[in-house]
Image (cartoon, rainbow, N blue to C red; front, side, top):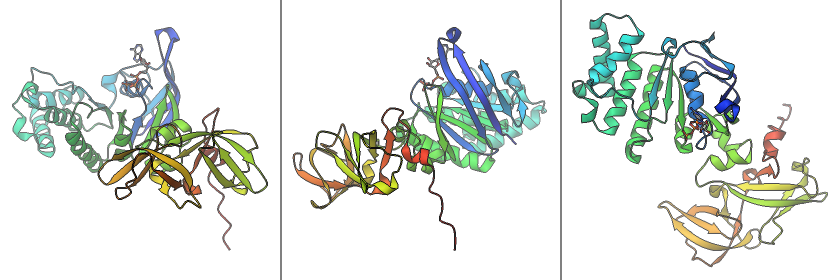
Length: 374
Ligand code: ATP
């Protein structure tokens, strides 16, 4: 069992000159796999280190399994942390590395500890490495040992701090799947910090997005992808990034016309669907590259293709509609740079953000109220 609750935690450094984490509240359910993601310096590691007990919050409380552990020493918390740099003892063998944490955190007799280490090593496929020292292992093997060392302790909570960042791309993908499989099998509550949004989206039951120490949004990966709370989340989640165009709204009785003021970009929406938009509002229009499609001249927006970037199954077309405005189209759509094409987007794929606050208009509006059933 291992729920984790962060209750309004704040962490200051340098006498308050740096606020690394700002009033963060979060409930992690027992057995849940939560990924924490955000740009460098957003407070991910500091948050994790506070859960581990390696940093003390300036204010706020941390509860594990309902118990307030804010003032409990790291060694007394039933958590196991896996670090990016493996943090293995170089002079100990794999067996000794794995047994060490067990010796510190339990009073199991030696024979039982050895049996647990052997079983876990087998589960991790590293039983042949038990007598090797870390210096003799590859990066991937070291990370397996570090994971094995965490698993053997059967903690209430796993904390992962960018554990795969030192591995090459292929190994990273393999290890991602492996960590997910192990977590599923063991059902241990996990908080996984990464700066890689793709890793966060593919691994997490739930994703937590931070910026400047503040929570931006939390939710299931698909919900966050489809309904970003603000422009930052819209741009951070998804690859290539969401396209943005700064627009002004002109509202008539029937329609909301969004234009960028240069004549390059114009899009019309039914006014009835957007009652919160007023004439003259400054907005940011957002659409994901995969939601931009080529259209007929009669219905599409005319634009020039600047660059064509083939990525195998798809082509990325950089369009003259804004900075780095990309259409992700099938690889058989192959215009030449300079060609004029027409593109469109479905209204359901359009995201609108307040230009000043960055907040999503849809998110503020909330889910549409379901029609009463007959
Ligand atoms: P990264 O992905 O680069 O590791 P992060 O999101 O994990 O970044 P943190 O390491 O938590 O971010 O740092 C958050 C902020 O707190 C940063 O501005 C960082 O410089 C600052 N910070 C972290 N630890 C300390 C410390 N011990 N002393 C002073 N400032 C610190």
